[in-house]
Length: 340
Image: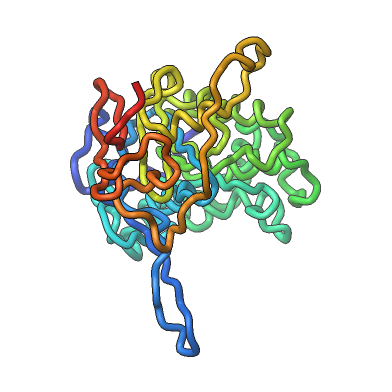
């Protein structure tokens, strides 16, 4: 895509050998109010001390059960939500406490593709208005240049540029998600959070969107945080995979290694639930069935968050929280009694 306006320059020198995004001790708690005066009596520990690095040009898959904090983490790292604690370094600069104009300048660098293509597009706006809104906010193009840019973006995501005057209700779910992708690309970002971008789509359309995201990543050198609950999809698109449970990262590893040799019991249980198309292999393998329900994020368990459902839990797991420890060069897991 042609350059319209030069992207904002961050103050700290940064090299591509460093992570484009580095998160340390990140927390996002939501207050729980009760009583007539609506006083805060507790907090939902949605994200509770996450350390994570994402390298430029890679796709980091983020998986876990519903309610584990994946989407909250994605929204917090691009400052759609203010963090409760911790640091968020983007291209070497801590952006966790930026506000106002300083934060707005970063919006061109970081964007998001939302989960629901039906709810994330304003039904009262035309496609041209939806895709062109980021151009208007950042003052990137006006008049004929703006319209040409919108048509170009629609063409890039595989839509007819003549759709510029149509409304969202005239499109299918897959087409709406392409509009959302075009909107995310409008400001020429370097980092995109993909918040379960295919979970609301038909299976026949999911592969098309995944292939589109991969082509765009290669063409524009994009970096993705790809949030999903479908492990087979994450395996296809991700370079590395991070597994979350109850606000914590349990394991991080290259995709091929994680699927071949998981070290955390929670990861092993998730992988055992993936169906295998070969009926002989499917019948012969061991399924790991977790007992009980996910603990409340308002009052999470002491020590290891997973211990209340872990088949390998020992008394020590309740006394101390396991740190992320290295299992090889790029493999980390937070477990005192890892899988062999």
